[in-house]
Amino acid sequence: MVTLQYNSTERRLEGLVIACVQMEPHVGRKRENVAQCIRHIEAAADHGASLVVLPELANTGYVFTDRAEAFALAEPLPQGETAQLLAETARRLGVHIVSGIAELAGNQLYNSAILTGPAGHVGVYRKLHLWNNEHLFFEPGNHGVPVFDTPLGRIAIAICYDGWFPETYRLAAMQDADIVCVPTNWVPMPAQPDDRPAMATTLTMAAAHSNGVAIACANRIGTERGQPFIGQSLIVGGNGWPVAGPASVDREEILYASIDLPRTRSERTLNTFNHVLHDRRADVYDPMLGTGWPASRS
Image 1 (cartoon, rainbow, N blue to C red):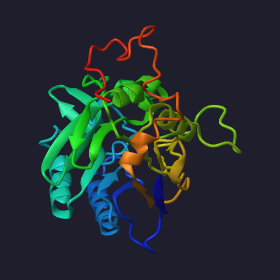
Image 2: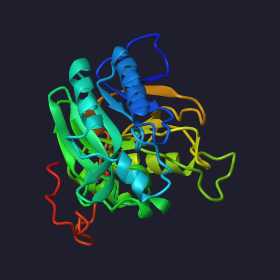
Image 3: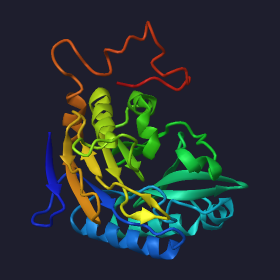
Image 4: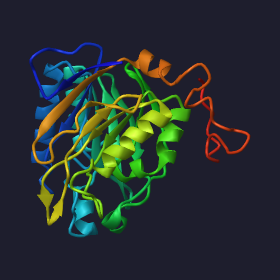
């Protein structure tokens, strides 16, 4: 299904090459964080990546002292400085970029992610499911689960805790998403055994398999104002198996994987009788989970 490359420049990959950037933003240092993001994007593009995924809130850091600090760091999308710099970088390098950004919309804040490409702005996703103290700073997302048409394929976005809800991925799959990009700031889970994979990676693998979509997760590392982050970024194929990573828990690195999208779509057929999306019992439950959105074209 895939040709994979893990944190290496020994040979270039071909096809749809996804790069997940695992890095350490620093809260409040927006210019430094964005400059670091651009350096990583340049490195990924030099390696042949056509889609680069950055962590959640990559431009601002994550652990805000209060709402005033969050407001001071947020910016409108796509007009804000960070979005414009990423758009310029995407045009210059000929890549698509997904990055977490703190979004200012009037007097409201959203934990958002932007998708931009060589032709300019593509779309914005707002995190639906807020984690812990995010409730003190952000509004819950109100854009649903949009899926964006791009020359690379149909791309959806989820952010961190969104991945704990199967509905997020199912709604993306039902709108014919090929890839779900996940900017994330995973933290340790309660009662996580030291000898078991992180819950986040397990949930990602399950979601990819049950929906037949590739999922690319870019996590951060480090400890910010006492909050540790667990790294372990990964890229999972549509069959549910990792094709790059999980990455380390404490190093900045870039994961690369080449995804064969036609084969990913074909592998939703598990055998003569079973297809992970066509087997849904639409006579028992609403295939679009009651949203009223258009059904899949597949």
